[in-house]
Length: 297
Image (cartoon, rainbow, N blue to C red):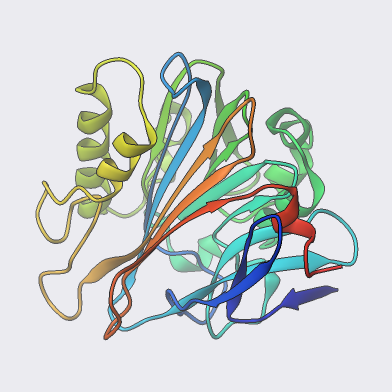
């Protein structure tokens, strides 16, 4: 059972005060995440050897949602992105917990909707409330094999992991202590290619664009580099990392989520939303101990 602190808000904190800021991002009924682009860098490819995690969150035009600070009765607190109308904690699509573990998710759009619903739908919530490190999560193999098909990037300050979860308990994991990982909405690992029942052109084109942007960048990535990747529109209105949607029926990007996990200082979240009829909003949040505790205990 969960207690949600301010259903449509999250908490900015400094040493002296707690400021509740109301946010609306996206909105979608049901258990699915959205089409997303995910990428991460760590070690010798990231600022000061820490981890950088990027995500853009796409949805049908007109949808909204929210960022919530969740305080469970058992387990770690976390800040998560949710569909606005859903009160179901299982619907979190990205989050960071108070222990410094980050997870972001993308739909497995290349398999049928019916198959996407097979399995447990509480994986992200369980990761955020139950684990402090990538290694601790990956040792729980039954949790992954019983989950619904999806793609995840999970990160702490020392390690990043890409998890591709297929049907009937099949999954693969790629782990990096130095290097890059990236994913969109179709299976790319050789052992899971047969899972791709549907041809999702925009997922393939976004993956190619993401791969290009990461490949052409020399050396170490900074926070500014990841923000620039998230904002990239170089592949057109429907196939870029930041999608603006060429037609009303086309999906568009409404949120950007970039997290920096330093080995020597609190995590930092760089967050942007662009809701219908609302001015673009940008936030930089230091997730120090005060953020998780002041005004919530």
